[in-house]
Image 1 (cartoon, one colour):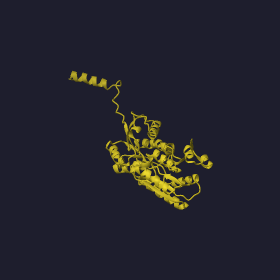
Image 2 (spheres, helix red, strand yellow):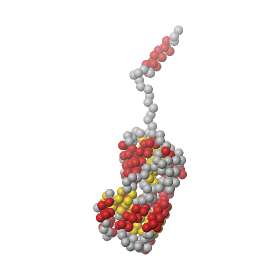
Image 3 (cartoon, one colour):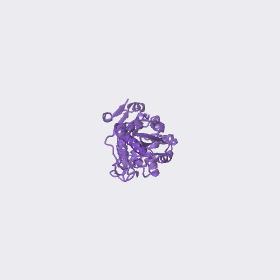
Image 4 (cartoon, helix red, strand yellow):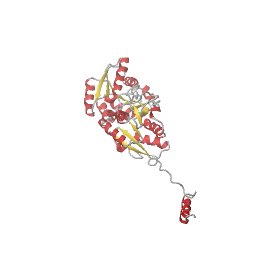
Length: 331
């Protein structure tokens, strides 16, 4: 004999399992994307970050179909211009066990020391192979991939542009660089040697060294200045450009933000576009691709930006040949 209560119970459970009641759906994973930048973390935070590079990264993710708060959130950390903080901030992101980290070039060494498993997207490295960030461009081979700035390769071209701007004379060109851009200085040395030009090394170990470096350039009667875009100097862009103007030194920089901060001329990759392109690497990694198998992306377009207002303040006339080649002239 069938137990009447058991029978009624089975009918009730069967009704719950019927077509009118959908089975519970598994919760969708919300990815956590770490960001390790050079400035203030607060400017990289939230769905509409104030920092242009953060905005470019999130714009790239939106264009790929990601919705902030539904598919992903960010965990930004910023060194605020203090390289000594890179290691601690990298360790903090690793402890959070984020799914992927997008990192500014100067922070990469600290990140590689902190983790060999969390995927890292470079945004971007001045020389990924030379600095030991990846094994080679086609097959990075570790947990790091992303984009290259090709800064070192363009050093000779920047020197040529500077000489075109200030033709003639035998005055040395001063090179402002820091520990993170030692390869940049060596590339400048090699390029100058080939062309028979003299250089003056101005190595910066601390932001407090800047005034002394410009005094040394003035004392040596330098005719121009070549500035690397390493982390320490990049965060001091306004100060560097102001000192160059005060010292009456025509200067060429790697990246547009220096010229927007009052610098004379820049030639290099569009750094905001780099951060936008980094989103495509994040997308591939979140979909299962391994950084070791994702080739490093090299820039295909370089921009020449000239600040005519700064040129006037320096008493310089920009050659027409340079103006015609410029991607942007800031008036």
